[in-house]
Length: 231
Ligand code: IYR
Image 1 (cartoon, protein in one colour):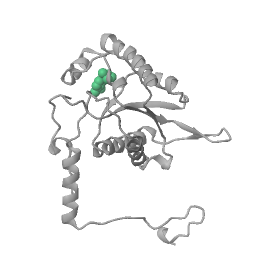
Image 2 (tube, protein in one colour):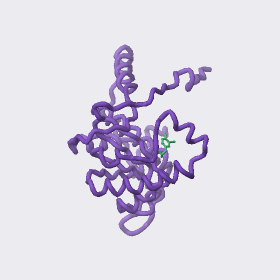
Image 3 (cartoon, protein in one colour):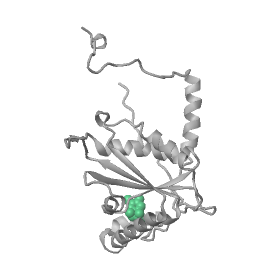
Image 4 (cartoon, helix red, strand yellow):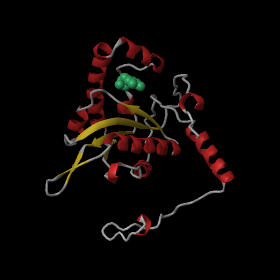
């Protein structure tokens, strides 16, 4: 029997829901519009303290939760931090690691690579921005009976979900910063997450400061990062 005709009793398939095909010209227009919008996205470090309605963040997170994942195990957890005291504790712990990084741990080459970005150990945005979204990668999930279920490709999966989250926040007109204080084990303690979860990154999000500036850096052109094999 052909694969497609096999009767799948245990795990039945359903017809592909809500698929839409567009005429090629419309495809071009839609993509051109998407590209124009997404190419305006910049990583921002100057945040306004202005609040953002929580439902905006929730919808962006729902979008992130649609990401493909290894065996559909959805190996991620997002902690949305808006409380001043928790943000203060995160800033304090991150700055301890960052001072160590800038003063001792980073190689001269690494510091040189960071120079155009103008970063340093001071992280005021961790208190000022309305939301810090701590992204955790789940190595395992634990069933109610205590059994551990291994996750597959958790880093790739969590990266994909985070990419969708960043794009969704941009679409909403918010800015964000993918912050990776290293090591960031302190996030497990402060946010009370189990050792089976590894901090993946801290996504700082909100509105930009009115006079926000960004480094004058360029993106590679298509030819520089894509090759085609057409035979
Ligand atoms: N975590 C440090 C250093 C840093 C590292 C990379 I790679 C960057 O792209 C930017 C910064 C910091 O946040 O300052």
